[in-house]
Amino acid sequence: MEEGIRPILELSGLTINFGGNIAVNEVTIKVQAYQFVSLIGPNGAGKTTLFNLISGQYQSTSGAIFLKGKEITEFGVAETAQFGIGRSFQLASYYPNLTVLENVCLAIQILKKKSWVFWKRTSDFPEFEDQAYEILKSVLLADKWNHSAATLSHGEQRKLEIAILLGMDPEIMLLDEPTAGMSIEEVPAILDLLEALRDKRDRTILLVEHKIDMVIRLSDKIAVLQEGRLIAYDDPQKIMENKQVQAAYLGKAYEG
Ligand SMILES: Nc1ncnc2c1ncn2[C@@H]1O[C@H](COP(=O)(O)OP(=O)(O)OP(=O)(O)O)[C@@H](O)[C@H]1O
Ligand SMILES: [Mg+2]
Image (tube, rainbow, N blue to C red; front, side):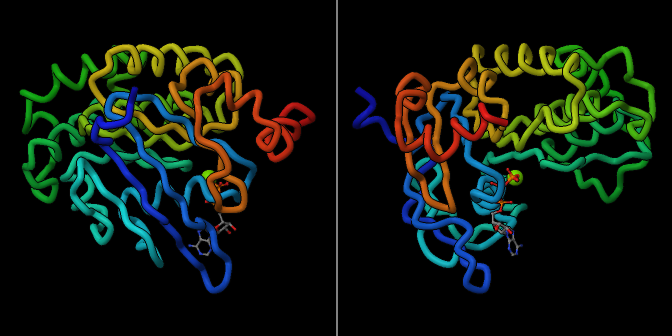
């Protein structure tokens, strides 16, 4: 059924070799627009590296990346961002000395292409504050709007990162372990948020996550990486039933 629809994102034989360590090995995959696709696999499988390739942090050794049919293989971070790819990082990526609201205002301002170099205070851009506050409400962080970002808990930091991404309004959102470092009580709120984002069906979401229950609940499709190779790409049910996946990843995850 999906044949014939042009994918929003296409990776073709994508490979990166770090001095003999092939972190991503001949990955070929098509992601349809507005789908929620999760990327799973053991530690070191190449998930973050694949995100780094898609978002232009790293340049591939071989292979190609297409966004809506346009080749973006050699694009850097600024160019991929301009073309609608936004990502969060496994580690924190926000301005700790700014308030929560200011961080989101800054993201919106970048989207509007007013140079951040000249940015000083949110009061310079009051028009962004209402929008930023609405985004903070959607990630359940509005009550902390005037707190310094440095004072947030791990869970709140992840919410802020998602808010920053939403401020940038990317067509394709790459989320690398948004619940990493969170306390168990904080996870359901993020899960609900991701589910709400998915249900809007107004952007494509790629998620890297080790919490398999969360991945199964959220994903239209799951891609499984093992030692840099894509070993399966299917709907959650089929992934769970896949013997190779069970051996490579799920067995280990459940044992752990
Ligand atoms: N800049 C780099 N230089 C050299 N090797 C790298 C670099 N970035 C990643 N690697 C290697 O690529 C491999 C894949 O790492 P990656 O961080 O993508 O794994 P991951 O699937 O995200 O793991 P995790 O679940 O632990 O986050 C590892 O062997 C790692 O050491
Ligand atoms: Mg990683």
